[in-house]
Image (cartoon, rainbow, N blue to C red):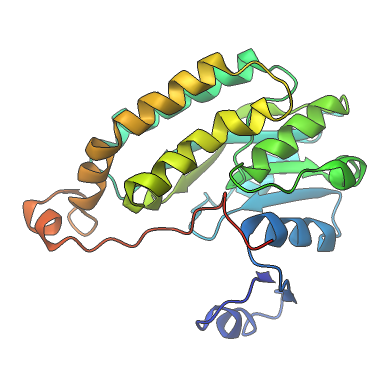
Length: 245
């Protein structure tokens, strides 16, 4: 586990488990923390999850099964969102977009850092060429560099994970930056991004609705609640596209 300057009891809890090794990364931000974790990993295949990722009990077994195929160098999977009303609709749209962009970028399909895996040797080949820039997504940058190295990323829907929808709790400016970082990450590398800009802009336009659906979701009853909405208790995530240089 990478301790990226945490101030709560997370590291102390992790130390209670003998199978957990904790390393410290003082440079603040997901871009540094994830890379440090990848560098410290010692297996043939590196799995990547976020702090709020829930995975099925067979997630590791699924990764092992996928990588029995020698041609697979990196894989990203299907995600579902919790903590949001009409999650079925949101998940359906998300999957449709992932399938489309996997088709549009056959060697550099967008990876999801919260649900992905890659070979250790693939990481070793591209790690020194990766970009460190504000306002872009480091997992997408990784996908582009893997594609440029002839390694490629595959979308495999057998690899499933459930994520929180805390990005909907960001204020409008932060949410806009979060969404627009998707096409920006690809434009930096000279890839065509018209469709991705369109998708990102649509998501930004839908921000008020998404925030409404997230803020009004009653996790205990697993449905929309006006009481929950009016209570207005939101816990936004840190925008992963920002970090300390």
